Length: 502
Image (cartoon, rainbow, N blue to C red; front, side, top):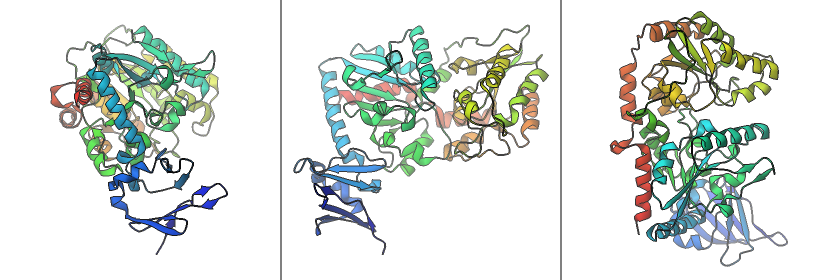
């Protein structure tokens, strides 16, 4: 019988105090060498009295437990403890959240101002437009956009992303603040300075943001998570089992299929997951919205095609779907070949520019000059343009898209337009249940360059879009918001109804 032993606890001169052992489904807790307690693992969180003795500080990689009422100086560290042992619904973080909910409910009942923050790190990830507006309509909410720094690609890019998002959002009339000050190289203490009651997060992966802006750093706020993109890649733990997923008050998943997956994959069985629609898609379902024409003026009417390559073009990574390395020159050839019939928008993933500086393309490293020259070509060619801002109007006024970015699979589908998902010789396509369903309703490549030409001539120019009705069925079954309301309205009512409860 294999016995898994966790790290011992040390007090002062490394005196062994507690020892945890997990043998099959049994948990044995010892004090010194005396067996203190034996529990069945699945019933552990039913012992309510344990919450008065154990404090959970972090439950993702390590589990730290403090016997804080009796011996506040005693700390137990248990590495790799199976998550099922302690459900976050009963841990100290959740206990704090219960108190937070009571506090916010009391403020709502007494008509006191409730501070609501929407986090955004890049303008392309801004999904809060309708939610922001609907919360602003209620004077009890003091609503702000907070631009938090995206640190994953280094400081230079972080400053560029923050500045661009801040300036564009302010220009659009949003009440926006910046969490990072590049002049003083300081970070805003959001908990202390803004005292948020409610925070909307759209990034769950801890590497994207500085630690102080992680969801888990705001136990005194109600935390709501809506991911910035709709992923269909097969990465169950990355989509449902990060600490942000477990500890947020509600995880608003983007589709009914994601809700089903959460209940099957999540270690808390999706208990905090709800599907009420996806705010990023509201604009595409709005029959009254009139998109702006963002396309370069031409001397005659032409079809409009978007090319949106992802940044992971090397096959050594989890999401290696990008075909950029195989077709970056070919797409310029295509743009020239159809210059009298089609205009093209080059909309790369925001991180492609940075990736080209460090990742070789077909074994050759590009210089900054080469990268800039390539991007510049898409800006200067008569029937081409480079796009790096928000995509809603671009999508709605286009006729088709050629792409390999997984999050665009569903986001472009709701336009009703045809799309070609490109796959190269070295690409890895591994989708989850939702991704497979979306992918089945897209056009695919088997012979990459040949099928791009076929797509342009048959589907785009000849308008032989034979998958159109299948896409419409999928959209209605999986992506349309319930209750005949926008997702923003559904989410707003969900939260305000929660605050009205006693």
